[in-house]
Image 1: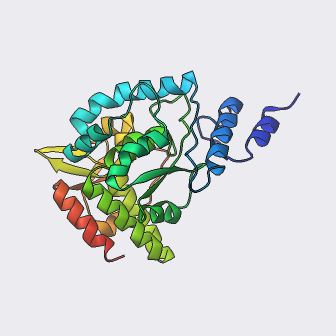
Image 2 (image 1 turned 120 degrees about the vertical axis):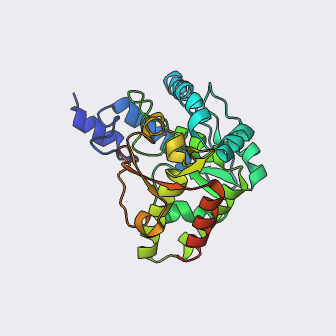
Image 3 (image 1 turned 180 degrees about the horizontal axis):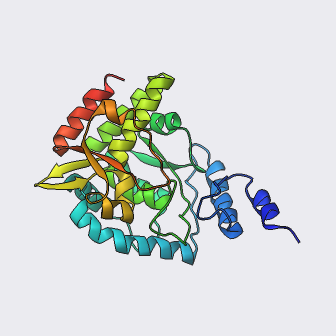
Length: 275
């Protein structure tokens, strides 16, 4: 009989998980991750996007997460994101397929293409210059439905796809992409950090309250719950944000706040022109 380590080594031929990942010791989950990764790797330009036959357990994680996220969005998400999310109108009971999401998303000039897992920051951001959002399709581990140490289909669709109808987010995404295509290695690191602290975890003031527009926040029940009570809030400062490392495996200890949506859009646009 094979030991657990031997099973994990055999099934880890495509997707490699860190030892502290919730699914690291779950051979069934790791096998499933590899199956979904193979679908992405087999996809060729011009082909219909692969459809994932999500399991009952994966569908349950999606629905459960939406039950917790939906009410928080009404009180913690900024108005532009809420408007964009309502246009996309994701199914909250069953995981949408990327091909179906693209039918609606195409109206904004963006489309989602599947990837097997994490890719380089330059690769991810550069694709957005051409209106392509590279998306994972796997589901987070069922044992921790409100947390994921890496982007999963909930993060991609709830956080990112739902924002890509707003022209400001579309424009900023393309600007990040254009900057990434030309950035030096040092500039690329600064670019990734600013992207993290804005389009992933940024906050704005809206009607006298703090609201988020960041995909990482909007797809995380825990992050939204604690964003105004436990995180250190700082005014958006690009010198500081572009030099502050982050840890994706824990709640973010520092968040940056812009005084308004329009100010955030203008300031980020101006900074990107300097990269």
